Image 1 (cartoon, rainbow, N blue to C red):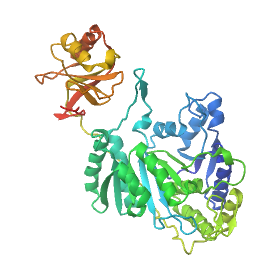
Image 2 (image 1 turned 45 degrees about the vertical axis):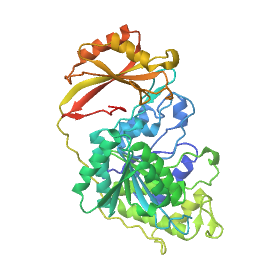
Image 3 (image 1 turned 120 degrees about the horizontal axis):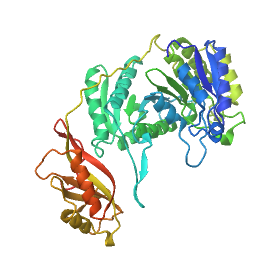
Image 4 (image 1 turned 180 degrees about the vertical axis):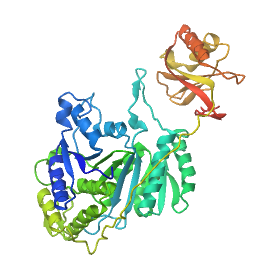
Length: 483
């Protein structure tokens, strides 16, 4: 990515064409020396029959150029349309989403004038895998998938980023007090990797209080690394706290490709009016130039942008009569930046990048653990009279038992309802029945097949199973209440 001179550009939807034109004019005026291959993505492409919002021809261009500067797009309402961003991120392995948030007082109002935080968001896994199923009339599920190599990549990237950019601390945010296996693994890997970076401070917050810290004390944070969904949420919080969503850029970085964009959407309500702020996309573009080894050009553009803010030349979203000098449109704001190329701000801190800020992350495949099957959770769809869990339990104990698997408990939405449930517990038609070998015998899939046949013979509709494993002797599943 650091030797490319040809990049892919998409003008997008809504305000996308306006802010992309402004961004490209500024880059051309700065003589960045890039060649642009323009592709069409977004709403029009979706409606032409491409469910992911990009045609095969454009996809090949994107893959070939390896660097993608993308304006916001509009995804049509209704089902059947895939998120183009998620598709690109996952297909091209863009595992790291880097979103810097900085306050620019007094030119952009913020309660936190010293805020300067970078959120490094995992980009490929978590609930954004989009694997969902309706399993009963009343219950749907989505799968949260977290992998060891995916977690290690993003956490190492956060520490490498901190080191490359002179940052002092990396903060991990998870919800591992509840999701002890998914978020717990992420936190555990963070604790392992932080020992390799003794020069960088490290701490951890539970995501709910961590989000409050982003909102109330962002100046206490430096680099934050977190999972996909949490990163998406706290990025918007950070953008608002910093002063304007329209100012923030984003880098989606992988081993071979990169996508750079603004974090905001296509804002169709103000499209074509020459009032949109191009700063978010421009900041994404400067992140792209740094990644491509053009730190000098990134400095040139970003310092001119800062000088423009400092001179009070502002678009309408940040214009304030008592702070701004002139209210300008999209084109005029770009013109003002071009006029200031070669200048630096005198009150805002000017930007200075190291000549080489390449970040390299490598992980080694770890040996497979010894996996032993010790039980199975069988989920059934059942709406018996009064939804009495004892009826399920009695029938499964008397009819559905096998030689090697015996019913241990039944839960409903994670709450124990058999044995020993209480009538106040609300129950849906979705029941988890846990079977184990009472003597602790190691099982195999034939035992599960035999059990499922017995469950069916007992008149129950089983809808899914989850095998219960030990890995190197450690439990690989959550315990239920009472176990």
